[in-house]
Image (cartoon, rainbow, N blue to C red; front, side, top):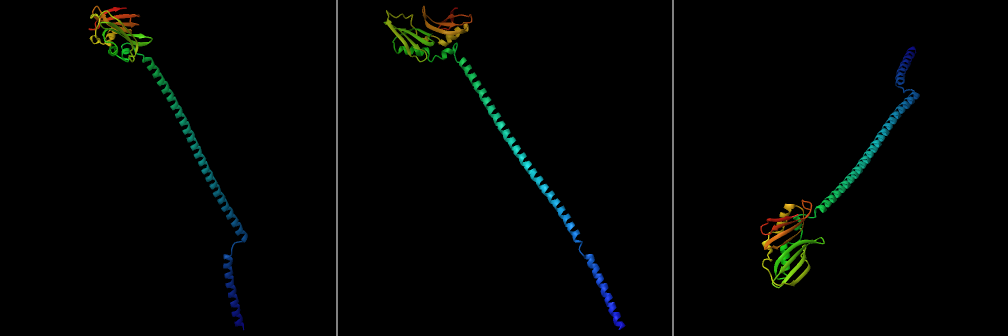
Length: 266
């Protein structure tokens, strides 16, 4: 009986020790106080929230940075557009100024050309529109005769040829515009006879421009007119000049065959 009790007590003690050991492990492994867990969760949530807020703040800052960049880009584009507009305007103004300067330059050149287009001296002869030979030929188509006198003169601002001819029975005189040899007037009258010492052929004389140049080299001035005829059997040019070097008008007689100056009257 005692042995049985002893065994039973030993079993109970062993069981208690075992249960105590198991209980200690469970207490050691038992979860933390719920309030502490809750506080920890709250702290973790708050930390997470702070992180989220920081993240949100960073995202907002990034968005603001993007917006700032976009605004800066738009401002830069606007500045570039404005710069382009200013450049275009400046370019247009420059082009307008250049065109204005070119127009003024062209007008100035036109004025200079207008001032210098009026021929003087021997150059006048190149602007007549016809030659003395052509004037004589045109007169001979209307009258059959020999040349007595050939003259170039100005009438009412136009250069005019006067061609005088004769034959055994008639004398003929025609005035023609040098520009186109159109006939201004014609006259014919009777003649008692032709004197061979008074007539000549234009081909016997030196060219009129050569005679004019010789006279102008002698006294200067501007051409007023010339006459070609015979004087005592000598074929002569009489060149009339105005505004000469001496300050007045002059007449220069030139041998129409040799080109020699015969006389100067100023």
